[in-house]
Length: 520
Figure 1 (cartoon, rainbow, N blue to C red):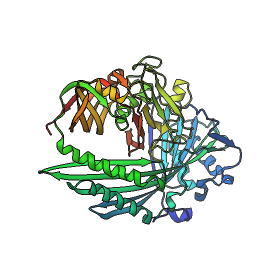
Figure 2: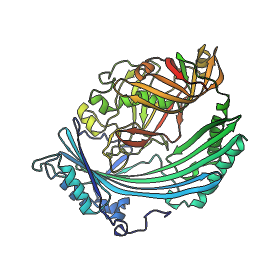
Figure 3: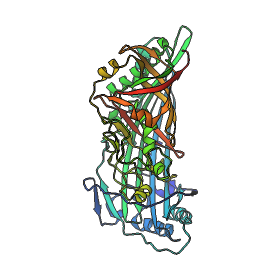
Figure 4: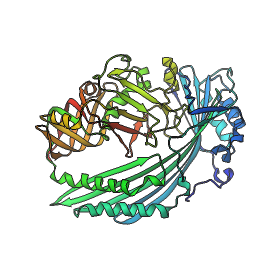
């Protein structure tokens, strides 16, 4: 199956009904969106008259209203319906041969009901009225009373897209993708004779979503995604090393330009072969200079999660009582932005239907805002920041990051490196873990460099960075003017859900981070 289900009748595809449900209790609900009038416009006309994507599945305003009536039938305060149709194609090459190619199709609806300080949620893998109403009745069980809210007439909202593509992925055949994979494979192998194995995969995805709620909102979005990933394995003098690189964007086929593919190939090969000359990581608490771009993962994990509003609403985050207070030096400004054109973490609307926006979290060292969904926005009596995200229709939305990055500072990268007598330059992170409450983190550094007497010297591998996010933030004493946004295949996990994200950082010096490692 190559082109999805565009020409297929709903009943030909929907031959099953599968309903899963979960009800969870969380503090405080509700809270509306602050609509951006430049990107969100309203129409009184019925949904079916607008040629919406989900018309092909028989979805209209009347059906959505009946589903929400079922959701509110036991006294709920608010109900929303989230529909999703996602088509993903995946092609992989190993040892110069295509060894895997497949297409996945996901279709279903999630229904959420809010009552006081509790949430009811259920989903179905069928867009028939009976299946969606069954899910709505399950979600409605969070309340136990008589109905007192009726769904408002739906008003179709149109949005301005930050990632519209000229040619949809549904119209791109595998014949257009194979030359890209073959080029990438050739480039990686040709970079260094020590490379003995190359694995490539390329995937494309289009997710169509619709959000309707009992306050009258009805909005759709089409979300493309392109991803390429290259892994190189090299051998030298009895040693084996592995490296990788990825590149991703909310874009179409044109994103995979020869220049971008060559960059992926060269990075994957070079990150691998440089490890043969790596030395042991230094031990102890030392200054760490974080390279621009991918080092933003430390900002995302060690600091960003602590600024998601649900952790603060529950008193879990160390930032819970710090709004309006200084938490970083004056030259540190951090934003979470869903409006960056085509960046992996960008969204036109969040998964509650709120317009995306640029949210300033830290301004000149002062904590200004958390990232809010509907529930936390009501708790704090603020508008949503458009940060309610979910992995799929099978999950309820929670506050999540989009593209989280630090703005440029007053220094130069060379000046920052020259300021360090002995330290570590962190270039490529592999993974890490964070404890939200305490803000402590451990990150695995795949690739870095020693800094000795103000100069970058030998390659370092297998280092662990250990510290406290808030303390590291407070010690970010030099920030350069070379901010880069990372465009790889970053995913963020929270509450059992994974969503695509972006992050970025200028060259930044943290006064001291504990470094551990092992002999190379």
